[in-house]
Length: 144
Image 1 (cartoon, helix red, strand yellow):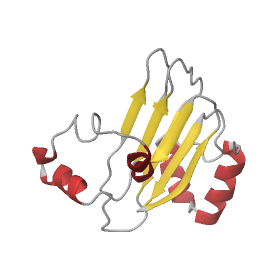
Image 2 (cartoon, rainbow, N blue to C red):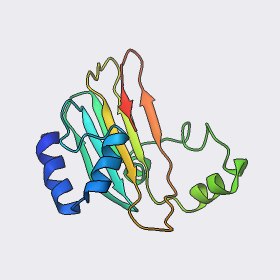
Image 3 (tube, helix red, strand yellow):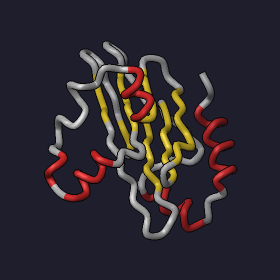
């Protein structure tokens, strides 16, 4: 398992955030150093640039990977109806990202998982779908 702090530091250095972007991220609760985080997911525009776990009992995947790996028909588009509004409909039709977070049965995920859907480009949209599952007897905390 890769250390969240090392992985985040390496990835965040590659993204070369401006001071303004760093402030925006900090205001949302995203710790660029990954301190006291069970996992980190970072989507920059349409690119998953970070997906790291640092605690047993936690599964964290890009949504496309999770849809290939797991049978999620009981969860995918069950909470919101795509016809709710044009934005939701577009997300259903043009899935471009999102995350899957799952605490396994009985897992006590003590530190929060941080998930950031960051838009860097002007006039840009992210059409995403996220699924979060806390299995029976588990505990999960999320900063998003």
